[in-house]
Image (cartoon, rainbow, N blue to C red):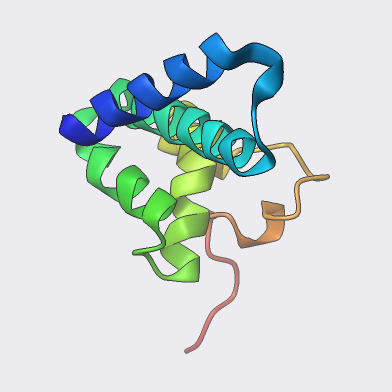
Length: 106
């Protein structure tokens, strides 16, 4: 976890400087906070989905797999909730996984 310790140390240093943060440092602080939030989210996910969620943050999944990871994350990793999702305003709604197949090829 050397990487995490380094991020925390940089964040603390930037906070000590308070108003004297350079724009580059401010961007680094935002990135480090985002990385920390992603790491916490992955750690809180069920073991079955941790690797998939981690890869979605690093860009290691196909678009379809990334949509699946987002839908599962949004529905607290409950497949039934993804299938019965009523968030029709979501841009991913029509692409969500676990939908009942209608029609199909014969």
